[in-house]
Amino acid sequence: MADETVLITGGAGYVGSMLTMNLLEQGYNVKVLDLYLYGDASLESVRDHPNLIEIKGDLRDQELLKTSLEKVDKVIHLACVSNDPSFELNPALSKAINFDAFEPLVELSKDAGVKMFIYASSASVYGVSDADNVTEDHPLLPITDYNKYKGLCEPILLKYKDKDFCPVIIRPATVCGYSTRQRFDLSVNILTSHAVNNRKITVFGGSQKRPNLHIKDMISLYSLLLKQPAEKVSGKIWNAGYQNHKMIDIATIVREVVAEEFPREEDIEIVRTSSDDVRSYHISSEKINAELGFFPQYDIGDAVRDLCQAFKADEFGDIQDNSLYSNIKRMQELDLQ
Image (cartoon, rainbow, N blue to C red; front, side):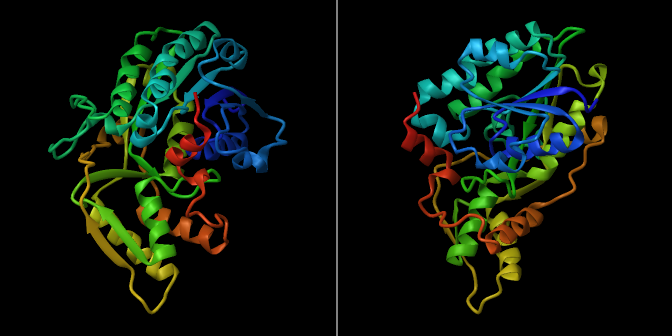
């Protein structure tokens, strides 16, 4: 299997860069299609790898897609305008990338002979739910356009399913932890940054329940899916999460780990403030546990420790006003059209 060619859209991104390096280590041939909005440093360590092809380009360029898909066995589609604030910055552009470009990519993939297409949807498609455990059968009740279009892509992909084309949909929890293309606009990551640099954590709201998944587990899941026989996974939809915690409880975990990693006399303060973000849900990952035997190996504390080690090594420099660590700040700077 490891001699297969995998195209990763968004392969230089937060999850994509770490996934690219992981698959190269396993012996896969990897093609990365990415706009490289955040520079190309994330893949610097593997840039000269003989099994890596990097393609700088836009998902909306169908001619580029056709050439990118040549001799590709499997696609992992990660590329998108990610998170609600970034989407809302330019809704028309975001819809064009996240939704309008989706079906052409799927159709061109199938035409090119791609055997498996793994789509990274989002657990946020559930919106707000009081259910004890939100399973894959729960109604999709998105409350933002980002969530809505993530969900609307799912049936588009599934309608292309046949014996030669295996669609797979993952609804991941919020990913956390260290990456060579670091993000500090994700809940665990940004709380860790504040605790390390300010000795103060501001929690917006606090009672919202949010599922999380360590980036290493996210990568392990994609790797696991690539190895599955089509008859086992084709047309399936799975939640992928681990710890479902209230935001205030996540902040407490972050405070405890950072205090261990950076012991100082002053305590790390947690301040709660109001929030307009009402998204709250407790997802169940029992289906993927039972059907694929996927059980996460890392927790929120591990993600915080990994980030602390990177801070100790001064890998990030001054992150305060650095747009490389924030999707919305970068998009505002570049004014992408």
